[in-house]
Image (tube, rainbow, N blue to C red; front, side, top):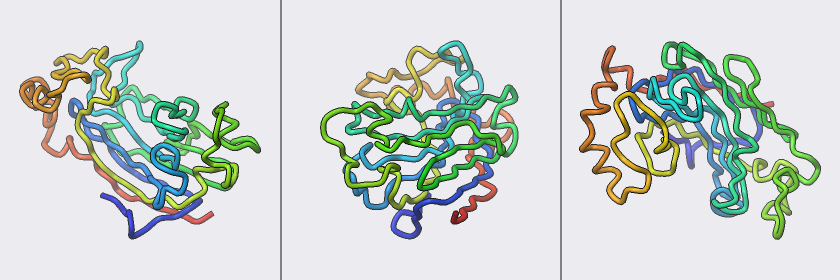
Length: 228
């Protein structure tokens, strides 16, 4: 679901009440992209991820659960895909009972001075860039793609909303080095990853409806947006 070409805004507060799905390799997301990409192609014009998670209930990597027990918010920005500085603006919150067990509130507060993310009214991260903007904050060099914008550039333009549920992927979102009770049926470097995924459906298909067939859905109670 997208509001591209129909609704977009700059600065405000967005709150979504949602219940993430459970099921191996499901990728729920509520996010925003620039309407006109005035600073150039991704990630020069930015991306605002209000909610992302993973549907695996027992996916483990880097010493912890990175599945339904972890929800996170991220800003993507940089001069090129290889210089995406999202690590500097990535924020996480964990719940032992999993974000798939009930509805939770996910919020972004976006102003001309800062961007703050909250889960269930608890702030999990805030970025207030210095006078030199994200170029200075990212310690970048060479040309400044946001030189003509404000200190919030590229996040000083209109963005539209996307709500989606993806599956799998080869960009490393589901790392090959992770462990999962039923294994991972594809490798991120595979040239036939989609086929490998389907051929291994016996590994994951049953996890999509262990309780009922609606658990594999991203359920959104509401999305509210206020001007600030």
